[in-house]
Length: 361
Image (cartoon, rainbow, N blue to C red):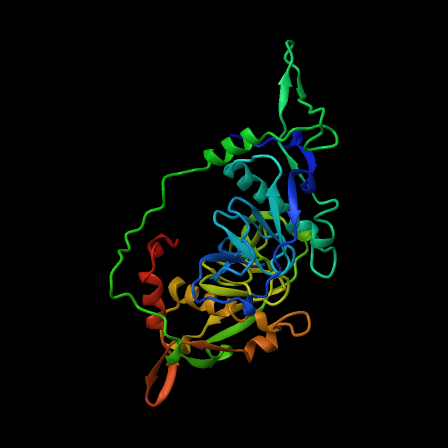
């Protein structure tokens, strides 16, 4: 199925959904003794799920089937929620006014997320001031075909979804999402009782610049970019940091890690091939002195650790090149000659044992 957006019409989100501003719960005050409810935060990963928490007395969770939208943090992160949930700070909940299928909701979440990516920024044009007022998206609409073959939009006299009477084509949205389905992802990694466990008690602190040479990206404006096949890595929290493909020659080698210090601060991604990184991104080159061959498994383990450090850095304390060089991270370690070194072998084995690790390209 093809998407012909030229015939799409504009709809205000407030006309499609009831917009609730969420529970605004503080994650640190939630209890987890008998966790049974999903806690959705402003994160841009894992469908917004931060953790599971206990039921809060006299507060019913939001029902499954609603959509969550991050108004801060990973602004615009928009997800369909298949289970009951609570929300943290700055997370809006979109509740359907009329029945909409799961597939149509998934279609809409993608459009909302894409719209937010370019139009709303923290401390600038903030989403929370527009979401209930004039935030809009373009959607396919229902058409009627006359006897002479001319197509005209079908109109709703009650103007249920639009002041112009346009009707979103939810059936098309559902069919389009269903057309994307493929066979389930399989894995050859088998469950067993001897899996490596994470026990951070034995981890030690290491200075980031002792493990990596850290180099700065270089600014390249949109106007100066040409069409090509070189990955252009930006300070984004999605798509492995890939913002575009450009015609300029790569500035950095593959088999490295990119780490954003501006924009989506603290987003770390493994880059398998040579690329260009914007000046909001620093590039981590694994040092030969580490004594092992760097690979995607070690990189993915370390990327996860780096992302956990993002809370330390904000507009008051940016993760600049100098700060990054002196940053300390905790890693699995091994004792050699009375000195602790990062246990890269453990990191690689841990990632390789995970379900679907054999699907990592």
